[in-house]
Image (tube, rainbow over all chains, first blue to last red; front, side, top):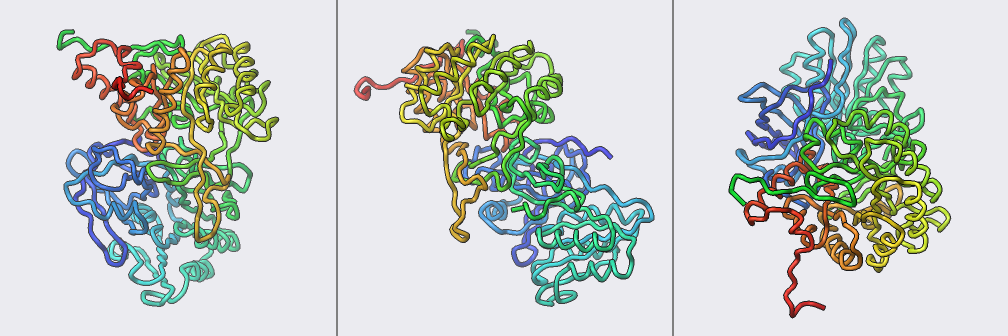
Length: 271
Length: 313
């Protein structure tokens, strides 16, 4: 499938609400939106008043597209994010009706599992936002298990949405406040020990993805990871988001990814 | 001028005719086609492509960028596809009617001349811009543009190798920009572009380490605009060469400030990352400004900064 061409527009905030802890859900009316592939992202300029040239903080923030539904002259695009710094703090202050500059969708989308193949989606932290659409589309043709991890139940995002998809859902929290106590990678180990035929998709903190890659490799299973990195543009120009490759050289997370076959990533060279 | 008549935005930059003075800066605009989804490249004056070397180059390890107050630091290390791949693969993707200026650099003067010669063979390239902000290996890593003798040798050598219009992009990391501008003029450059990024450093106090893998980076964005305006103004008083003003331009008003300080044209840089359509919006804004002020020709603005008589030094 060819990913749709990106657009640059001023999106209108429909909703921007807390989902407990630092988690927030942003819903944007994006006119001209032509769809997106699972795992693609948008660049959002933090702060309101998209029409005013704002210089500080200067750079837009990459955010996974959680899901989108046709509406008006485009779609309502949903973003799940955590307030973690100045940019996301400003984004949290934006009110319904205000505008946010948006560029996207960007990056290459996940290749869906083949029909009949089992998919295990492992996600932690804000990485959870990158795999919802993959789960929603993959479940049509394949058996899907979603393993979500976080420090505590407050940090988990979108759990009810995954529940309503009807996929096999397991949770792990480090403090045991939801699901199993421990790391989400332990759930993956158990899953692959039971059934060694699955394709693994991982998105989350680098150590989590690296561990998923190791576990998958030990079982001989393919693993796709969705990398994060600082980026200024999101469309292959600033060259800021370089990720080192196991074959030498660099790939750009925004243009060549964010999805990579786990064996292509030189994990030790990631910041 | 009648109300319906559009103002004349054409300028001649160092022998390169431009439909308007808004270019985009090397290193912030890829090889042009990356912006096709967002911007009609024929709307702007033209673009300066990413700096090219003889052979393809990989960049630095991450982290390569860091946010800074009203700006960003980068240390990409001039990753590029190499001059041959640019001519064979990138240039053909650019639509007719788009003015392309090629930027070049190397770590030795002979290398610069070789790249310039190769680029001069392409009729699709309207002019060259020599990136003089790269470390000169023989000078122990000091930038070519930081030493007037090295800069003179560089410009002389590239001038001999290049057949078309030649711009030299100057480093701001110098004490006297006027001296560097005069060197370019004396050695036969057709114009100068300034400023390149300002050398900077960002530190993580928790880890006690530099944020960038390269330790030092180039500061760009609105943070450097007043420095750039000052240097363009100083250079314009030192030489008669046309100047292309660069540094933190985000709006049409920013671009006009550079014209007033003596720039014939401008380049939009870091702002392309924030808004890939911004260069076209700046062209629109300049046309509005000209109409609003009843200015028929944009060239009338160049160097039109008015300093009250009692403030002149």
